Amino acid sequence: MSSSWDNAFRGEPGKGLSHNPGFAGAGSFFRSPYQRDLKNVDVAVSGVPLDIATTNRPGARLGPRAIRNASASIAWERPWPWSLDPMAAMRVVDYGDCEPPGDNLLSVAHIESHIDTILQSGAASLMLGGDHFVSYPSVRAHAARHGPLTLVHFDAHTDTWPSSGNGVNHGTMFHQAALEGLVRPETSSQIGIRTVNEDTLGFRVISASEVHRKSGREIAEEVRARAGDSPVYITFDIDCLDPAYAPGTGTPVPGGLSSFQALDIIRELRGINVVGMDVVEVAPAYDHAEITALAAAQIAIELLCLYADRWHSVA
Image (cartoon, rainbow, N blue to C red):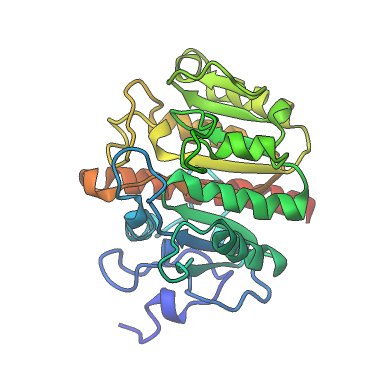
Protein backbone atom coordinates (compact mmCIF):
# COMPACT_ATOMS: atom_id res chain seq x y z
CA MET A 1 0.00 0.00 0.00
CA SER A 2 1.22 3.49 -0.83
CA SER A 3 2.80 5.44 2.01
CA SER A 4 0.42 8.29 1.20
CA TRP A 5 -2.76 6.28 1.72
CA ASP A 6 -3.95 7.95 4.95
CA ASN A 7 -5.68 11.04 3.57
CA ALA A 8 -6.28 12.45 7.06
CA PHE A 9 -2.54 13.12 7.34
CA ARG A 10 -1.25 13.20 3.78
CA GLY A 11 -4.21 14.42 1.74
CA GLU A 12 -4.69 17.83 0.17
CA PRO A 13 -7.94 19.79 0.41
CA GLY A 14 -9.83 20.05 -2.86
CA LYS A 15 -8.68 16.69 -4.23
CA GLY A 16 -12.01 14.95 -3.71
CA LEU A 17 -13.29 12.15 -1.53
CA SER A 18 -10.69 9.58 -0.54
CA HIS A 19 -10.76 5.87 -1.36
CA ASN A 20 -8.89 4.97 1.82
CA PRO A 21 -10.30 1.87 3.53
CA GLY A 22 -13.08 2.70 5.96
CA PHE A 23 -11.74 0.33 8.62
CA ALA A 24 -8.28 1.85 9.09
CA GLY A 25 -6.47 5.15 9.39
CA ALA A 26 -7.16 8.32 11.34
CA GLY A 27 -10.77 9.25 11.99
CA SER A 28 -11.09 12.58 10.23
CA PHE A 29 -14.36 13.83 8.75
CA PHE A 30 -14.87 11.96 5.46
CA ARG A 31 -11.13 11.37 5.31
CA SER A 32 -10.51 15.09 4.82
CA PRO A 33 -7.01 16.21 5.84
CA TYR A 34 -6.47 17.40 9.39
CA GLN A 35 -5.21 20.96 9.13
CA ARG A 36 -5.02 24.01 11.39
CA ASP A 37 -3.77 26.35 8.66
CA LEU A 38 -6.91 27.93 7.18
CA LYS A 39 -5.23 29.79 4.34
CA ASN A 40 -7.15 29.14 1.10
CA VAL A 41 -9.58 26.84 2.91
CA ASP A 42 -13.26 27.03 1.91
CA VAL A 43 -14.84 25.02 4.75
CA ALA A 44 -13.45 23.98 8.12
CA VAL A 45 -15.17 21.09 9.88
CA SER A 46 -14.70 21.10 13.63
CA GLY A 47 -16.10 19.35 16.66
CA VAL A 48 -17.31 20.82 19.93
CA PRO A 49 -17.31 17.89 22.38
CA LEU A 50 -19.55 19.35 25.06
CA ASP A 51 -22.66 17.98 26.76
CA ILE A 52 -22.97 19.68 30.14
CA ALA A 53 -25.80 21.94 28.89
CA THR A 54 -28.09 18.98 28.31
CA THR A 55 -31.24 18.53 30.38
CA ASN A 56 -31.66 14.79 29.86
CA ARG A 57 -29.24 11.96 28.98
CA PRO A 58 -25.59 13.04 28.65
CA GLY A 59 -23.08 11.66 26.15
CA ALA A 60 -23.15 14.04 23.19
CA ARG A 61 -19.57 15.08 23.97
CA LEU A 62 -18.62 11.88 22.15
CA GLY A 63 -20.68 12.86 19.12
CA PRO A 64 -17.95 14.52 17.01
CA ARG A 65 -15.73 11.44 17.24
CA ALA A 66 -18.63 9.11 16.43
CA ILE A 67 -19.66 11.14 13.38
CA ARG A 68 -16.10 11.21 12.07
CA ASN A 69 -15.69 7.46 12.54
CA ALA A 70 -19.01 6.68 10.84
CA SER A 71 -18.19 9.00 7.95
CA ALA A 72 -15.31 6.75 6.89
CA SER A 73 -17.83 4.10 5.82
CA ILE A 74 -19.43 6.40 3.24
CA ALA A 75 -16.41 8.41 2.11
CA TRP A 76 -15.63 6.41 -1.01
CA GLU A 77 -17.74 8.33 -3.56
CA ARG A 78 -19.75 11.51 -3.90
CA PRO A 79 -23.10 11.61 -2.10
CA TRP A 80 -26.05 10.40 -4.15
CA PRO A 81 -27.90 12.04 -5.93
CA TRP A 82 -25.71 15.14 -6.04
CA SER A 83 -23.76 15.81 -9.22
CA LEU A 84 -20.81 17.26 -7.31
CA ASP A 85 -18.27 15.95 -4.85
CA PRO A 86 -18.07 18.68 -2.19
CA MET A 87 -14.53 17.62 -1.33
CA ALA A 88 -13.48 18.29 -4.92
CA ALA A 89 -15.67 21.35 -5.47
CA MET A 90 -14.25 23.04 -2.35
CA ARG A 91 -11.16 22.92 -0.17
CA VAL A 92 -12.47 21.23 2.99
CA VAL A 93 -10.35 20.41 6.03
CA ASP A 94 -10.95 18.80 9.39
CA TYR A 95 -9.97 21.55 11.80
CA GLY A 96 -10.06 19.27 14.83
CA ASP A 97 -11.99 20.07 17.99
CA CYS A 98 -12.64 23.19 20.01
CA GLU A 99 -10.58 22.51 23.11
CA PRO A 100 -12.15 23.50 26.43
CA PRO A 101 -10.40 26.31 28.33
CA GLY A 102 -9.29 24.52 31.49
CA ASP A 103 -12.25 23.49 33.64
CA ASN A 104 -14.60 26.07 32.14
CA LEU A 105 -16.11 23.83 29.50
CA LEU A 106 -19.32 25.81 29.19
CA SER A 107 -17.72 28.92 27.72
CA VAL A 108 -19.75 30.85 25.19
CA ALA A 109 -16.83 33.17 24.51
CA HIS A 110 -14.41 30.29 23.93
CA ILE A 111 -16.61 28.47 21.41
CA GLU A 112 -17.58 31.74 19.75
CA SER A 113 -13.89 32.62 19.37
CA HIS A 114 -13.20 29.18 17.86
CA ILE A 115 -15.89 29.68 15.20
CA ASP A 116 -14.90 33.32 14.69
CA THR A 117 -11.32 32.27 13.90
CA ILE A 118 -12.67 30.08 11.12
CA LEU A 119 -14.94 32.79 9.73
CA GLN A 120 -12.26 35.49 9.91
CA SER A 121 -10.06 33.32 7.70
CA GLY A 122 -12.70 33.44 4.99
CA ALA A 123 -13.74 29.82 5.44
CA ALA A 124 -17.23 28.60 6.30
CA SER A 125 -17.88 26.46 9.36
CA LEU A 126 -19.50 23.04 9.64
CA MET A 127 -19.68 22.24 13.34
CA LEU A 128 -20.22 18.80 14.88
CA GLY A 129 -21.73 18.70 18.37
CA GLY A 130 -21.95 18.25 21.25
CA ASP A 131 -25.33 19.10 22.73
CA HIS A 132 -27.42 21.73 21.01
CA PHE A 133 -26.23 24.53 23.26
CA VAL A 134 -23.09 24.74 21.11
CA SER A 135 -25.17 26.25 18.31
CA TYR A 136 -25.65 29.40 20.38
CA PRO A 137 -22.03 30.63 20.38
CA SER A 138 -21.74 29.54 16.73
CA VAL A 139 -24.80 31.63 15.84
CA ARG A 140 -23.28 34.56 17.74
CA ALA A 141 -20.10 34.33 15.68
CA HIS A 142 -22.00 34.04 12.40
CA ALA A 143 -24.34 36.93 13.23
CA ALA A 144 -21.36 39.13 14.06
CA ARG A 145 -20.08 38.51 10.54
CA HIS A 146 -23.28 38.31 8.49
CA GLY A 147 -25.85 40.23 10.53
CA PRO A 148 -29.11 38.76 11.84
CA LEU A 149 -29.57 35.22 10.56
CA THR A 150 -32.40 33.11 9.25
CA LEU A 151 -32.45 29.90 11.25
CA VAL A 152 -33.40 26.67 9.50
CA HIS A 153 -33.74 24.37 12.46
CA PHE A 154 -34.37 20.60 12.26
CA ASP A 155 -35.42 19.25 15.66
CA ALA A 156 -38.01 17.48 17.77
CA HIS A 157 -37.99 20.49 20.12
CA THR A 158 -38.24 24.22 19.46
CA ASP A 159 -35.44 25.06 21.93
CA THR A 160 -37.10 28.44 22.44
CA TRP A 161 -38.16 27.99 26.05
CA PRO A 162 -37.26 30.94 28.30
CA SER A 163 -34.45 30.41 30.76
CA SER A 164 -35.49 29.32 34.24
CA GLY A 165 -32.75 31.49 35.69
CA ASN A 166 -30.01 28.90 35.43
CA GLY A 167 -28.50 30.33 32.27
CA VAL A 168 -28.66 29.21 28.67
CA ASN A 169 -28.90 25.47 28.00
CA HIS A 170 -29.72 23.24 25.05
CA GLY A 171 -33.45 24.02 25.31
CA THR A 172 -33.30 27.79 25.75
CA MET A 173 -30.52 28.98 23.42
CA PHE A 174 -32.72 30.00 20.48
CA HIS A 175 -35.00 31.97 22.80
CA GLN A 176 -31.89 33.82 23.88
CA ALA A 177 -30.67 34.20 20.28
CA ALA A 178 -34.01 35.73 19.27
CA LEU A 179 -33.96 38.13 22.24
CA GLU A 180 -30.46 39.26 21.24
CA GLY A 181 -31.47 39.80 17.62
CA LEU A 182 -29.04 37.15 16.38
CA VAL A 183 -31.78 35.34 14.46
CA ARG A 184 -34.88 36.64 12.72
CA PRO A 185 -37.91 34.54 13.69
CA GLU A 186 -40.00 36.10 10.91
CA THR A 187 -37.78 34.48 8.26
CA SER A 188 -36.87 31.32 10.19
CA SER A 189 -38.35 27.81 10.16
CA GLN A 190 -38.28 24.91 12.60
CA ILE A 191 -38.82 21.50 11.01
CA GLY A 192 -39.90 18.23 12.62
CA ILE A 193 -41.20 19.68 15.90
CA ARG A 194 -43.31 17.31 18.02
CA THR A 195 -43.17 18.72 21.54
CA VAL A 196 -45.33 21.42 23.15
CA ASN A 197 -44.22 25.05 23.33
CA GLU A 198 -47.09 27.50 23.02
CA ASP A 199 -44.91 30.57 22.42
CA THR A 200 -43.41 30.29 18.92
CA LEU A 201 -41.70 33.72 19.17
CA GLY A 202 -42.70 34.19 15.52
CA PHE A 203 -40.80 31.18 14.14
CA ARG A 204 -42.62 29.09 11.51
CA VAL A 205 -43.04 25.76 13.25
CA ILE A 206 -43.41 22.88 10.77
CA SER A 207 -44.44 19.90 12.86
CA ALA A 208 -43.39 16.34 12.19
CA SER A 209 -47.03 15.59 11.32
CA GLU A 210 -46.97 18.29 8.64
CA VAL A 211 -43.75 16.86 7.21
CA HIS A 212 -45.38 13.42 7.05
CA ARG A 213 -48.36 14.86 5.11
CA LYS A 214 -46.30 16.86 2.59
CA SER A 215 -43.44 16.24 0.19
CA GLY A 216 -39.89 17.34 0.87
CA ARG A 217 -40.20 19.76 -2.03
CA GLU A 218 -43.28 21.43 -0.53
CA ILE A 219 -41.56 21.87 2.83
CA ALA A 220 -38.35 23.18 1.25
CA GLU A 221 -40.18 25.62 -1.02
CA GLU A 222 -41.89 27.22 1.95
CA VAL A 223 -38.68 27.38 3.98
CA ARG A 224 -36.74 28.87 1.07
CA ALA A 225 -39.46 31.42 0.28
CA ARG A 226 -39.62 32.51 3.91
CA ALA A 227 -35.83 32.89 4.08
CA GLY A 228 -35.51 34.83 0.84
CA ASP A 229 -31.87 35.69 0.20
CA SER A 230 -31.06 36.34 3.85
CA PRO A 231 -28.01 34.61 5.38
CA VAL A 232 -29.10 31.17 6.62
CA TYR A 233 -27.72 29.11 9.46
CA ILE A 234 -28.81 25.44 9.27
CA THR A 235 -28.78 23.51 12.52
CA PHE A 236 -29.69 19.83 12.61
CA ASP A 237 -30.46 18.22 15.95
CA ILE A 238 -30.32 14.49 15.24
CA ASP A 239 -33.40 13.93 17.41
CA CYS A 240 -35.38 15.46 14.55
CA LEU A 241 -35.21 11.90 13.23
CA ASP A 242 -37.49 9.28 14.73
CA PRO A 243 -35.72 7.08 17.31
CA ALA A 244 -36.01 4.20 14.84
CA TYR A 245 -33.47 6.07 12.69
CA ALA A 246 -31.55 7.84 15.48
CA PRO A 247 -31.73 6.14 18.88
CA GLY A 248 -28.35 7.53 19.91
CA THR A 249 -29.41 10.89 21.27
CA GLY A 250 -30.16 12.45 24.62
CA THR A 251 -33.81 13.44 24.17
CA PRO A 252 -35.47 11.04 21.70
CA VAL A 253 -39.12 11.62 20.76
CA PRO A 254 -41.18 9.07 18.79
CA GLY A 255 -43.04 10.15 15.65
CA GLY A 256 -40.16 11.91 13.94
CA LEU A 257 -38.77 12.13 10.44
CA SER A 258 -37.17 9.29 8.57
CA SER A 259 -33.63 9.68 7.29
CA PHE A 260 -35.01 9.96 3.77
CA GLN A 261 -37.47 12.72 4.66
CA ALA A 262 -34.75 14.83 6.28
CA LEU A 263 -32.31 14.30 3.41
CA ASP A 264 -35.03 14.98 0.84
CA ILE A 265 -35.79 18.36 2.42
CA ILE A 266 -32.09 19.27 2.53
CA ARG A 267 -31.66 18.36 -1.14
CA GLU A 268 -34.71 20.41 -2.09
CA LEU A 269 -33.29 23.47 -0.30
CA ARG A 270 -30.86 24.09 -3.18
CA GLY A 271 -30.34 27.79 -3.76
CA ILE A 272 -30.82 28.85 -0.14
CA ASN A 273 -28.14 31.26 1.08
CA VAL A 274 -26.52 29.01 3.67
CA VAL A 275 -23.57 30.59 5.51
CA GLY A 276 -23.16 28.22 8.47
CA MET A 277 -24.07 24.66 9.46
CA ASP A 278 -24.05 22.24 12.34
CA VAL A 279 -25.14 18.71 13.26
CA VAL A 280 -25.59 18.08 16.98
CA GLU A 281 -26.85 15.83 19.80
CA VAL A 282 -25.38 12.50 18.65
CA ALA A 283 -24.85 10.47 21.85
CA PRO A 284 -23.18 7.21 20.77
CA ALA A 285 -23.66 5.43 24.11
CA TYR A 286 -27.34 4.97 23.17
CA ASP A 287 -26.69 4.11 19.53
CA HIS A 288 -27.01 0.75 17.81
CA ALA A 289 -24.70 -0.36 14.98
CA GLU A 290 -23.69 3.30 14.44
CA ILE A 291 -27.02 4.10 12.77
CA THR A 292 -27.35 7.49 14.49
CA ALA A 293 -23.75 8.48 13.80
CA LEU A 294 -24.08 7.28 10.22
CA ALA A 295 -27.25 9.33 9.71
CA ALA A 296 -25.50 12.38 11.18
CA ALA A 297 -22.49 11.91 8.90
CA GLN A 298 -24.75 11.64 5.85
CA ILE A 299 -26.67 14.76 6.87
CA ALA A 300 -23.40 16.64 7.43
CA ILE A 301 -21.94 15.76 4.01
CA GLU A 302 -25.20 16.72 2.31
CA LEU A 303 -25.16 20.07 4.08
CA LEU A 304 -21.71 20.51 2.51
CA CYS A 305 -23.23 19.60 -0.87
CA LEU A 306 -25.94 22.22 -0.31
CA TYR A 307 -23.32 24.81 0.57
CA ALA A 308 -21.08 23.85 -2.39
CA ASP A 309 -24.01 24.02 -4.79
CA ARG A 310 -24.79 27.59 -3.72
CA TRP A 311 -21.10 28.50 -3.47
CA HIS A 312 -20.47 27.44 -7.05
CA SER A 313 -23.56 29.18 -8.39
CA VAL A 314 -22.42 32.58 -7.06
CA ALA A 315 -18.63 32.15 -7.45
